[in-house]
Length: 173
Image 1: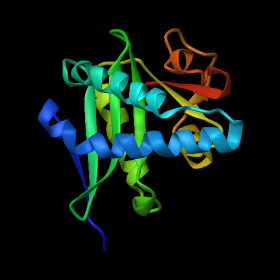
Image 2 (image 1 turned 45 degrees about the vertical axis):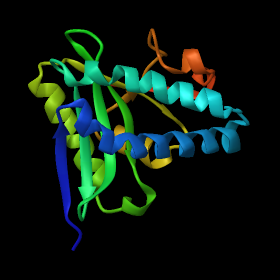
Image 3 (image 1 turned 60 degrees about the horizontal axis):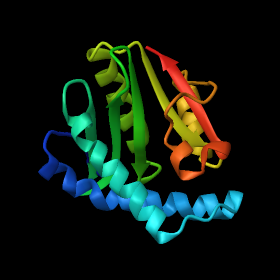
């Protein structure tokens, strides 16, 4: 049986092991946005998205944020982050499980860990941005009680042109 281990990353050096997962997620997302919504994101925009996200890493390491890595048989295979929004609200970002690691409960394990961490940090709400074509993810979020809400201020898609096709979800903790 495959062994899944969760790691909380605490330094910028440790997060580097996730960089390829974040890039894989971005590449997959861009392909799906093009196939589903005919949105075209050029390579320079893709790199800008990744650079913008990397600039957020320190805020996820400080205080009440988090970056969580799941390994499958020792290989980096899943990741999610908690980005503080306010004293009461946190955002779940860059939740991704590599295709080769899907179907073994890794996504649920990562989500449960992130929800537990958010509660321990004292957050009252957790929010996220996703897309309807991420059917399995949306179904999982709903099964944990996430509800669709109107777009929240400062969402990432505003800057990158995906806002019109995003779903916004929130869970009261």
